[in-house]
Image (cartoon, rainbow, N blue to C red):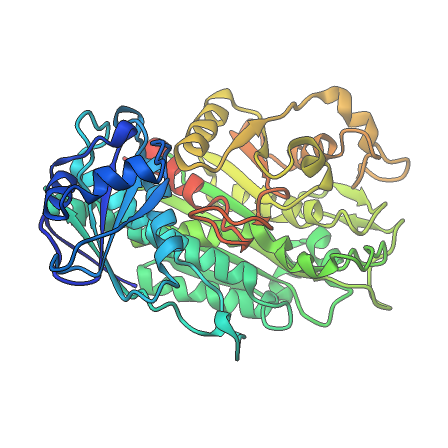
Length: 497
C-alpha cells in the first residue's frame, strides 16, 4: 500500500474518511464535507446511532456530484483523550473496513474536532502507522480463494495541516512497521522453510541497513563451549546457528543494550514429546528471536542513536536416536552443569549459553531476553500481558512504560531465592525444570544464574502473546510480532543519546 501525505483538501475520487467526536462533533474538514453533502454526516450520526466510541465507523449516504465515491466517518471518541494508540486503532479499523470493499484509494482527513490531544502531524502519522500495521497479510503460500487475492486498496493519502512534519514523523513509524512485518513474516513461515540456517540467512539481510551480522556455526559454538544449546540441537538434522547483530548508532558511552532471543524454529518437545493437538503452533516457538530481529530492523531502519547488540540462539528440538534424553547432564558455556529433566524445557538451555556469551563479549549496560518460554505464564496472564522478571527496578519500570506506550503490555513477576530449591539437582549444579508450581518463576530463576555479576537484566516470557487467534485492528491473527514496538520504544526512551 502506497502511503502519501498532502494538505487538507477534498479528494476528487476514492474514499474520503473524516473524523468525528462524541455527540457528532466535527473538525473543520468534516464540517466542510458535511456542508457539501447537505448535512449528510449529521443525519447519519443521528439516524445510525453513532455513540462516539473510539473506532466506530459509519458510511454516510451522499448526494450526487461530490466527487469522491464514498464518505466514511470514524469516531475519535473524546478528542482530549485521543492518544497515539487510539489513532493507530482508527487507522487499523479503517483499513479493515476498506481493504476488501472494492475501493482502490482512500484519503483520510487527519483533522480532529477541537480539543484534540494529539498534534496534527502526530495524528496523521499515527493513523497511517495503524493502517500499515493492520494491512499485514501472509499469503505467500496461497494459490486460490479470497486470501490469495491481494487487497484492492493500494493507495492511502493522509491529509494534514502539517504535511511536512506528518511525513517526517511517519518516516520513523514506517521503519518500525517494517520491523513488525519482518517479525511476523518469520513467525508465519512454515518450519520446513524456516529453520536455523535459513533464519540466519534472513538475519544477514540486515546488513543492508548497516547492521554488522555474524553467524556462528556448530563448530564455532562447540569451540565456545555452548553445550547447553548444542544439547538441544543434537536431535535434529538441522544444525544450530547463533546470530549476533550489532547496530552502532552512537560512539562512546556505556556498553550496548543487549537483546537476546530464543529461536527454537520448531519444538516437538524432543524425547519429552508434546501432544499432537496444536503442535503445529510450535513453529511460533522462535517468537523471542523474531521480536529481537524485528526490533533490530526497526532500530537500524530509523537510524536510532543507540548502541544495540542482539543475539539469537537458533535450534530445532526434535526426537531422534541422537536427541538428548531426560537425565542427561550438559555443561553450559558458563561452566555450570545442568541436569536435563524434561527435554521440552529447552528454551532456557538455549538462552543460558547466548546470555553468557553476549555478556562476556560485549559487556552490555543492560540485557533483555525474550522467549516463548513457559505454558505457566499463559495460565497466569493469558493472552493480555507478557510476564517480566527483572533484577533492576529502573529497567523494569522502563519496560512497563514502553509496553503501555505501544500496547505491548508487560506484568512484573517475582524473583526470589526461595524458589531455587525447586531447581536443585542431586547430581549437577541445577536441573532445567522445577515442577508444576511457579513454573514460569523457576524458569526465570534458572536464567538468573547466567547473568554476570550485577548486570541489569530483564526476562520477558511472551508465550501467551507471541501469537493470537483473535485479530485486533493493528494485529492480525497468527504471529503478532509482539516485542518489536516495545523494544524500539525502550531504546528510544532510555538508550538513545
